[in-house]
Amino acid sequence: MAYVINEKCIDELDGSCVDVCPVDCVYEGLAKRYIQPDECIDCGACLAECPVSAITAPVDIKDPTWAEDNRAFFALPLPGRDAPLDSPGGATGTGPVGVDTPLVAGWIKE
Ligand code: F3S
Figure 1 (spheres, rainbow, N blue to C red):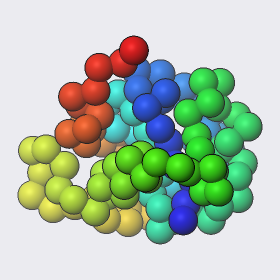
Figure 2 (tube, rainbow, N blue to C red; figure 1 turned 30 degrees about the vertical axis):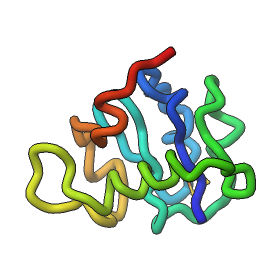
Figure 3 (cartoon, rainbow, N blue to C red; figure 1 turned 135 degrees about the vertical axis):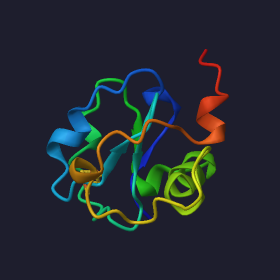
Figure 4 (cartoon, protein in one colour; figure 1 turned 90 degrees about the vertical axis):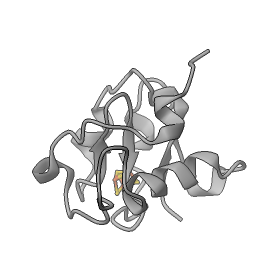
């Protein structure tokens, strides 16, 4: 199981996690970032960098909601797209995706 970005990232997009990820697997949606679970090597480097504690380590995942949503960002076609992102092999080359999962797009932040 990979590290997961949760709802605290929504509308933050700080990006400190992106800078430290050694395999460039933190992708940018529209209002949130997502970790590609098959590319993540579980190094934990991103965890301490996030200023809003939006990253959860696999051992600390109690509720699967955000793990499933991170996976869905890559495994299912995003709104307005015909095919899933799948495993693009690097967020830098992919660039901002410009869209979020339905869960994030409809999320009302407390
Ligand atoms: Fe990347 Fe390591 Fe986090 S591979 S997403 S910095 S756990």
